[in-house]
Image 1: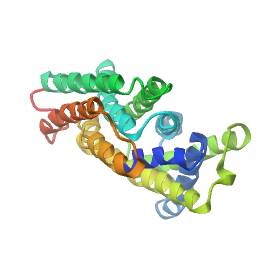
Image 2 (image 1 turned 45 degrees about the horizontal axis):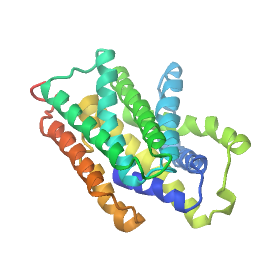
Image 3 (image 1 turned 180 degrees about the vertical axis):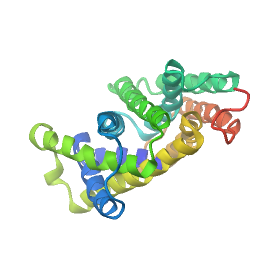
Image 4 (image 1 turned 135 degrees about the vertical axis):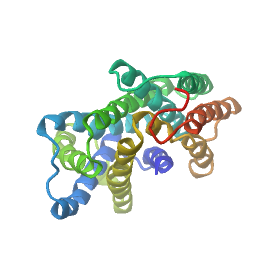
Amino acid sequence: MWVSFHLMSRLTVRQALTPWDVAALRFGGAFLAALPLLAWFGRPRIPARRWPALVVLAGLCFPLCAYAGYQMAPAAQGSTVMAAGLPVAAALLGLGFGQLRIGPWRAASLIIVSAGCLLLGEATAGAGQGSWLATLLFLAAVTGWAAYTLLVQRWRLPALETTLTVALLTAPVYLPVWALALPSNLPAAPWGVIATQAAFHGIGSVILAGFFYTQCVRSLGAGPTTMIGAAVPGLAALLAWPLLGEALSPLGLLAVGVVCAGLALAVLRLDRTGVARGG
């Protein structure tokens, strides 16, 4: 699902959808998919004072920044920066709020993935005018998602109720703004494209991936969960070549390998307590 998110988000550029359109399909699709779940399980019992943080961080910040970044950068770059940036952002935010500790193994992993991210920036520096802006947008996306991850752990939020809260509240906030003020190419898009993107981003990303990710945070903890996407950059880079025609340079492939190695180092040290062995 994570690999598909990067490929499908980049595909929207060829489908002439604006990032605001993709977000509208995501939020609208998730809202419609959540209604039967609402009828079956009842209203989520998340306190109202926590709704704004969930909507802003999980609902709006991550997808809007990611979709905007993919207007300017290839799938391999986005997947690598976000896979590397998420554990780094979670570690730094968690350290600041006293929720996570950074021991020698995690520190080594974070140094390696950061080095790989910088190497990728060098490899893609001449790829386009928006390459570095895209990188900043990807980092903003995962910083918001890292903050959401830490809040799930701190507030001990249940996965299903949290997912339904995000799905049900984000659409009413975003869709009126999109309809009245944001640029859109949606009326010109084929119905097949609209249905596919709404189903994938709304049902697949928000409902299914959101539920399983939040449940992982509950079960494993924030630190280990942010590290489990070790294979995502490599798979995204390999699949983007034949599917999207986006080939990385040898230096870019090396950067992806460095990031995967750093993430794998952390994954190999995880235990069932949610803390990396050896700190």
